[in-house]
Length: 389
Ligand code: AMP
Image (tube, rainbow, N blue to C red; front, side, top):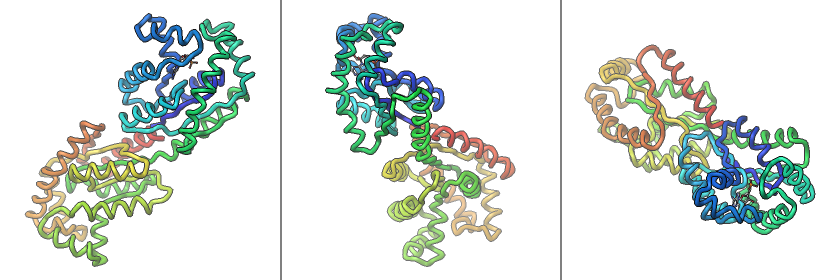
């Protein structure tokens, strides 16, 4: 997701730049000014309350702004991102925006500050007033709007400066030059977005080999808790010895151990484009842990895929694997295989169900040849990466 706010005095070019940015980055456009004008035209209660304030060049109350903006945002949670034009305009509205973003499980990427001097603002607005038909594009009101901007809106910048989220752009230059600068900044922001995939599927569904191949193809870091634990066993570490005992009795490894290993993996991964999580989360508790771990690193789950394979085929595959050197400690006998499948059924299926309620879970048919399934998964990952970048 890309969420941005275009900031600047009246006449800075926010509306003009928005038009291009909205189509270039496929964003949902939110202009509080346009929304208020629509309320005015429709003669609604909110419109009536705002009419005199707008006509005088003042700022409408934060209460009114919350009401018009909340409805629009929550009605469009599937948007690829939001572009805010003319909001936040007060310090309070900066907090409101943060709250709204949290509600959508996202955050503002940055604020673009279009800078123009006051005389340019005035001459542009007077020129616009010749054709805009706006009741606030005349000299007296323009001066009032600029005063409001200096007194109430400029302090908003401090909020974003403190968070290192503000980018200044010289708005006096030709439209195309300003546009190029903004696009470059936003593209850099998008490149920072990690693509995090959670790969589900019963043991034997192919999620391990597919996950590894996907990670390689798309430059993602493969996080397989099972494999990380095996490494501990191979290195005969204290964790490894504990884990061996648990495996032999077919139990899951305690969360403390798994979390420590994943945290280490995320912290040591520099410059990666994202992560593929396989075999984690396996329980509801772990699903909360993953949300927390990703949030700590300013990120979130981008896509969830469940690879589906019928149970009989799973047993056949695991049984076949148990007779090769790819045998895992946990599929060395039919009894253990069945226990693993039951474990998945009892603990992991509720996690997938939780995700189905909170996010979208994409189901991919895991039957057939490896390459065939890989192609289907690749298409999903490609689309997913495009949506975060
Ligand atoms: P704009 O189209 O952004 O120039 O907004 C026109 C007028 O609508 C402003 O002068 C304000 O009276 C009102 N307005 C628009 N957005 C806001 C906001 N976020 N907070 C308060 N008033 C607003």
